[in-house]
Image 1 (cartoon, helix red, strand yellow):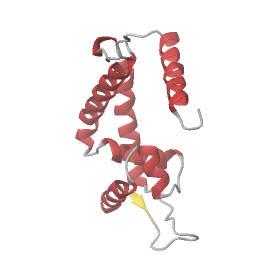
Image 2: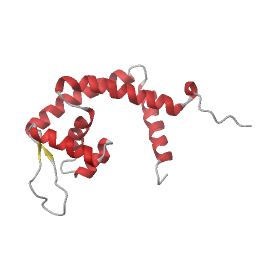
Image 3: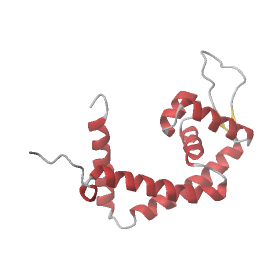
Image 4: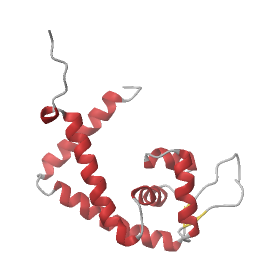
Length: 147
């Protein structure tokens, strides 16, 4: 009989989940002084790199539901960090862009998150960090519907 039990001490998936939880906790702590959550930061970062993304695109990029992203966008807009038109220029999507205050907060948040990532990878050589990125990308590809 084949043993199909997942052994947590040797499970790659469990180690990955532990790493994700530790990263999330460290990001939460780094963003807290800026009064940002991880989904809010992700939204700002996505818009900083790709202005005009729709709510659905932002939700996918931030790994939250569309309903959750609506709340994130509303809160960021109320803080004056985003501009969204009252009506869609075409279709139903409201293109969203950072305000100058949003861009300033994003710059500070990006530095805080980069410091977390630097701390996370501190024990790895540049080659090992590159290998880790490649290995994780291969795992994502293997589990993707098209993979």
